[in-house]
Image 1 (cartoon, rainbow, N blue to C red):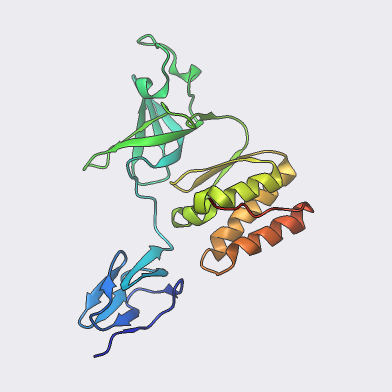
Image 2 (image 1 turned 90 degrees about the horizontal axis):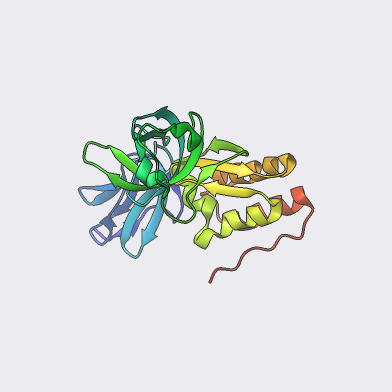
Amino acid sequence: MASALKVQEREVVVPGEILAEGMEYLPSYGTYRLGDAIRAAQLGLVRVDGKVIKLIPLAGRYVPKRDDVVIGKVVNILMSGWMLDINCAYSAVLSVKEATSRFIEKGADLTRILALGDYAVTRIVNVTTQKLVDVSMRAPGLWKLAGGRDFSVNTHKVPRIIGKQGSMVKMIKDATGCKITVGQNGLVWIDGDPEMENIAVEAIRLIEDQSHIQGLTERVHAFLKNKTKKDIVIPKMQ
């Protein structure tokens, strides 16, 4: 049988759908081979790299990975740190030594650093086989969030929301003047003028809904230009 690709790049496919026939094509993430055919194992967006076919998932909860930057909410205060909800099936632990470089006496009131309900930008430093997650704030760009508002997005759309080299989120920041942090766990924090915050949220929702469509950058650019009445510049990649 001659090999043939049955779908197009960035096409949305459903579980069981035939993506390619023949032995020239190779299955990768989110796909499997059944006989001479490569099929989709989940709902996803097709990516073809040469003869390798993989899917970008369009649904599912966040799976923690080492070095991911995530936004967490303090849900419990422990003797030696905090427990954070990082929008997945497993809680994360932020120890005192990973929260600050300052000396903290044993038994000190940890709510002076992070209180219940506070949000923080952290980096995952360890994920055990039992799915215990350790996070840290001991690096540039990691901090306690104050003010603003937060909302969640599909975790699999985060790369599109951020854009290549951060280009998409930079365009939204430049257009609205808002501070924006996008966690790889699907939590987004925005702080700025309330009207501009609303525009930023709409822009991010637009990306989330239309991430599979060609020309997304131009669509978001037109949306921001129309909403803000500003001459928006599309960031150039290096």
